[in-house]
Amino acid sequence: MGLDPASLRLDEQLLHFMDQLEILEEKRQKLNMLIEEGWFNISKARYSMGNKQVSALQYASEMEPLVLVHASLSEKGEAAFRCKRINDKAEELKQSDTVETIGPTEGGLRRRVNITKTDIKEEKDTSRDQCEKETQFNSKSEKSSIKQDPLKWFGILVPQNLKQAQAAFKEVITLSAEISTMQSAIVKTRLEMKTQMKDKEKIVSELKE
Image (cartoon, rainbow, N blue to C red; front, top):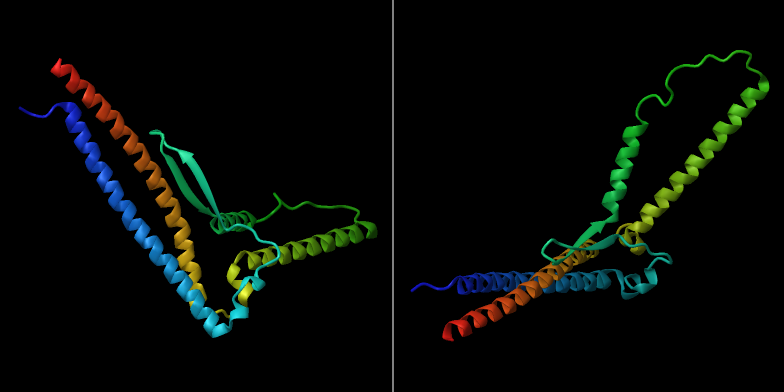
């Protein structure tokens, strides 16, 4: 006599639940390893640069987030977390701007008649204002790009250990989002297993009667 469909579904759900727990444990171990590696590299950087050179005293007065975490619900009702880096979006906008500026800015040549001295003076003034605005905008964008990279807070030539610590903690952020998504999926699977267990108990009680 074979198993009933409810028992088969419950067994499949249990195997899926065990696989999810195994993946979650692997991700947690990797997360702990990256955190330890990041702090160890920071301690190395402090040893080479000095404790006062790698501390909260070097933080910028104005900080902006480099990573945004987007939370959404899937069709199955599971919460999904996804990291979005602002630098990638800025690079895309920069590339689109460079593509758009290639080529002539005007549709064609325009012939002007009776050009006076006042017109020439106005054109010079407007071109000068545009140049000043462009230089101010470029300087602001350069300053903002420098502020965006936290490594610049600790100097221009930072040690390799500090760069490795930054890379480790960047991966920690992405991995934390993946772990949160996996935990949400595990909770959903556990609730489904409880529902299937109740259905199985109900079927067994009906068969006994």
